[in-house]
Image (cartoon, rainbow, N blue to C red; front, side, top):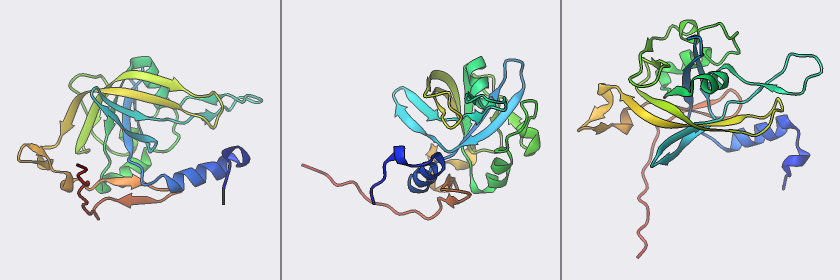
Length: 210
């Protein structure tokens, strides 16, 4: 079967892509508004994109406008906060934090503090203003590098690229002075309501080509 994206409905294309491009890491992004209101939300359109300079990117989708007759998308609180403050924190999500992360994924009113909804502890960051999630084992403080806006349609999104300016790693996950990757019980997003746990791992050595 060969499919053309232009022949598929948004829902069909969305389901096909998200069920195939998986598992996806989860960026648990904490931000603050210009007035100091806290926000926390997860995004699975996320990855590390560069090490020099250290860049992380996530894509917050737009919400459909509630205005009658409007076809424009409405920015999520996370995107609006990043535009206002130029800063955010990416917190990683472990299996133990899965329920708290899921609670923060709701489409709450802008006035709602998701840290309080999920009973999480906002910990002051070193450089940026948004707090990090104290319960997360690794957090990346980021300053905005660039935002790419693709469309104002409700089904579109923007790509937020941040430069990492500080990294917090819980001491329990440090071994011989380095991050112990096997100690991180991370989860990934699959399609629909499915997630995966990254505890089942295997190794393969990259071939050496003379």
